[in-house]
Amino acid sequence: MSVQIAPSILAADFANIQREVEMLNASQADYIHVDIMDGMFVPNISFGLPVTEAIHRHATKPLDVHLMIVDPDRYLEAFTNAGATVISVHLEACTHLHRTVQAIKALGCKAGVALNPHTSVSLLEDIIEDLDLVCLMSVNPGFGGQKFIPRTFDKVRKLKSMIDISGSKALIEIDGGVNLQNAPLLVEAGADVLVAGNFVFSSSNPIGTIQDLKLL
Ligand code: DX5
Ligand code: ZN
Image 1 (cartoon, rainbow, N blue to C red):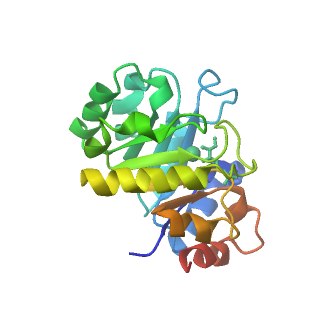
Image 2 (cartoon, rainbow, N blue to C red):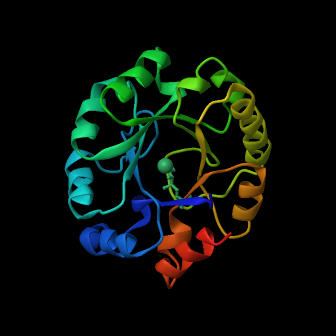
């Protein structure tokens, strides 16, 4: 299967959210990546439930919701009701990650776990079989438009071999600073889903840029 693309709506023009979602509907994007930031787990605040619902109202693509919030268990049901298809929580924000992952699945969503750049993929060894997706942060979460951290390539390779050995069906998603330079190398290392915010929305032709990433 070709690489899947998840444009991050964080980089969109929020004053024209319907138009931006319709652009993504018309593109080859596989998901719409929805970044939720609480000003606690990360320094920044993005948007929350009403905006997610509004995105979902216009979207024909599944929503890939990335919760960068403390104690995400409090909001799993609310984001499911707001239209999430995938919910990713941060390993660093969960004391009882196994319970949280089961709770996401019980709500009927696909369960993802996101790792900060400093967090070793080896910490997933005892939960990898339960996961639908692992989101490797290739920047420190909190802001779009940051520089890709090259150490990510090794993490992708290590995670890929863990997934292959365990028989897990988890997809490997890369989030942060993805562009046409690093994307082919990420796919070669084993990435299945690429998140792209600024690279897509700052380009003069976002639909064409999504297609370029898709054609890798
Ligand atoms: C960072 C977010 C990313 C971000 C990606 O905290 O999780 O999804 O929006 O944006 P770019 O592609 O601009 O780094
Ligand atoms: Zn994200």
